[in-house]
Amino acid sequence: MTPSQSLVRLGGVVVLAAALSACAGPRILTSLSPETLKLAPGGVALLPGAPGPSPVGDLVGARLASRAPKAGQGPDYYVVAAQSARVGKIGVMGSTPTGAPPAWVEAPRKSGWRFWTGDKPVRTVSLTVLDARTGKKLADATAADGHAGDRQPLSALVDAALARAGLITP
Image 1 (cartoon, rainbow, N blue to C red):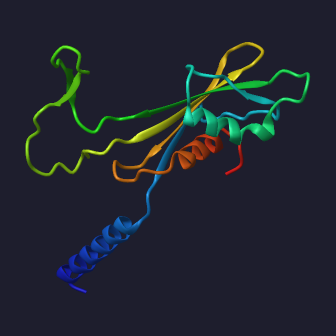
Image 2 (cartoon, rainbow, N blue to C red):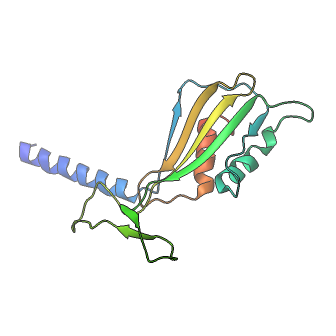
Image 3 (cartoon, helix red, strand yellow):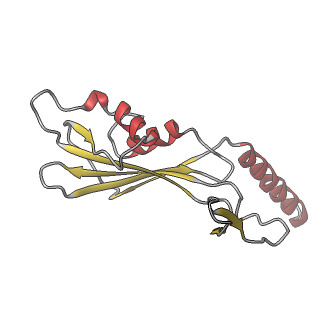
C-alpha cells in the first residue's frame, strides 16, 4: 500500500466517524463534585426554594417521594434544586414611555455563522445534597443540554442529575 492510499483510507475513516457522530442523538452532560460521592441509604427531603411555582422542584420532589423519611423521622439528606438557562441573545431592558413596562433591546450582532455558539439557550439543572444533621454540603450534581439545539425535556435533566448524585437509579 502506498502512502497516498493510506491517506485516502485515513480520510475515509475520518469522514465516516464525523458522519456517525453527527447522527448521534441529543446529549445530556452531567457532572458530580466530589466524584467519589457514595450516599448511604436514608430519607431524603427537598428544601423548598423561593415562593411560587417551581417546575424543577416539583419534578425533584416527585422523583424523591419514594425516599421520603418515615413518619416521625427526620431526613438524612436535604436536596436543593435549581434550574438555569444561558440567554440566547445579549441585550438590556430599555426604558419606555411612562406607564409601559420596560422593553428588551437586543445588542446588534455580526452577521455570519459562528459554529462555537448558538442562539438557543442551554438549560442546566443543579442539585446540592446537604447532610441533614450538620448542614454540610456533601455534593453538587448538574445535568445540562449537550448543545444549544438539544433541548432535552426538563424531566430528563432532573433524572440525569438525580442519578448522577446517586439519589435514584438510572
